[in-house]
Image 1 (tube, one colour):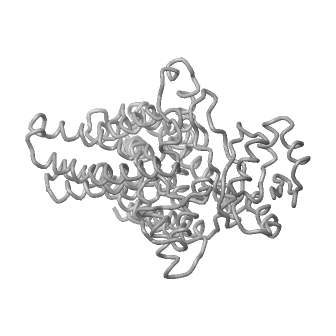
Image 2: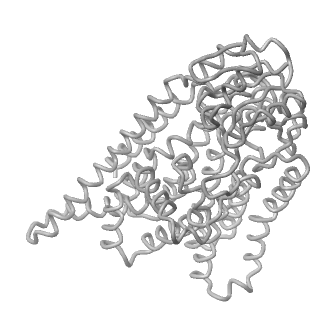
Image 3: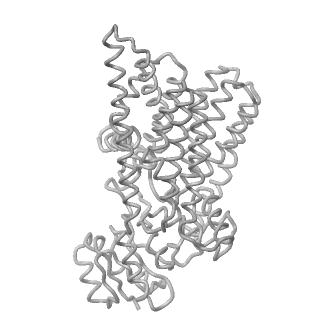
Length: 496
């Protein structure tokens, strides 16, 4: 027991230390979502602290009110700005503090659900999973989402064992917070519904607590997202909710891209490759135990979400949507690794399979763990390097001599299948401290640029790789507008 406590303390300390070190860095990556959260936080301090009306920078001529999740996270960053001054790393520090709560709640869950050795192994895989590490210092709402999400699972699982109403309603409150922080977390309701029916059967439909739980968990989210939808309908700005099509279609069954993409993200970022083997061993070793069925049901609820939203979750850039799967995956890997350690500790070598198989599982578990450590190291080093676009933005900023709106290259308006995409790229607006418009990379024409100029755009900050997608477009701009500065990847045209 003492050895386990020492190992657990060392794991938590190491996980906390690497997060603390990673938190102190600016918003220097060309991340659309981080820049959006940064700009929304900054706009709260400059344009009003009303949390119900978040404002983005790519607003064109409008006020910038945007459809998004409840902006509690960027609003908290803005409050910190008001108290301590503007510091780019503030959002990362808040995410880092939330991540410590995520680790604590996952440990509570693993401790209550698994055997001691299994719980420590599960915590090790969870704490050093690269997706969990990435969202731990990302300026994105996933930090708050995962805090509430893991807490909700912990309290609900505890209620199924103790039947204490306090635990049930704690789960309802955290579920509500998780859904408000990120609507995609609503899939956890599938797990809760199955566990509830397993516990009470049809009597659950006659239990007042069922309806109270649903009301607490869902009504705040329904109210907020109805308001957010109205912002979209009124102002036409959305952070990928209504302006992008995420959902599965019939082509899911004919186009291997979706299944391959989901599996690729899962294997690399969630299961560390060979971790799947350890999970299979867990199902074999402990297939009749509640911990295995609980973990499998949890993973199934996540998989249902990933399949339903396959048009997004299959993409390489969308790996962070798979962060919800890390919890159940870690429990399964912990069961497999912990059970193998327990069998090996018995030192019963009379039967070859009671020695060789557990040793093989332990070796595979260590391989998966070190694969995760290697991934974290790679992410950590990437975070230390300045994004070239960030450096070039600093070169561009002095040449924007007139105040006013700008036009910036954005993503494609539609995907390869013709479905709508959220094309608004926010990082140049954030770095340059400007508001303005994005132009779709697949709809670049001189007429479109002229229209933006008539709407008030002073400069066009054009990305060369996007200009190349429209043959002859760059040369046409050169002949029509003077360039004020050209860098390795950007050229800035003076539209006035």
